[in-house]
Image 1 (spheres, rainbow, N blue to C red):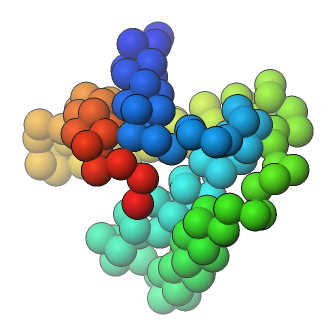
Image 2 (tube, rainbow, N blue to C red):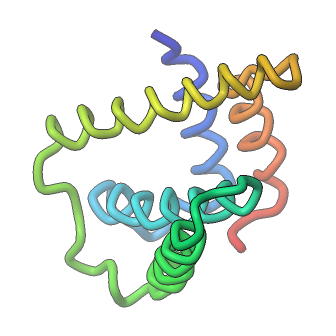
Length: 128
């Protein structure tokens, strides 16, 4: 539906240098680790049940270390693209539902526009 935003973010991430030297398979696999890292950072801003923040933080730290460990990704990739797409859609449902409620709490907030703006602005930062 919003292919333009998806393409703009993809282009910005490529320009930033995150796709350099990685096959599409490797890049896709690494994005799962990056997603876990970002989820841990998001969780830092919520009051959550006692053990959950610790579990999310541990998973985020592991994902961050794995993402940065170049040698881990040599033979990694997508096992089933169709199923991966369906699960990613599930992730987006949750992300967009969260965006909607955050917009209710402190409007305006268009998470897709924010993602495009962030990805575009991050190009000049390059790879961390």
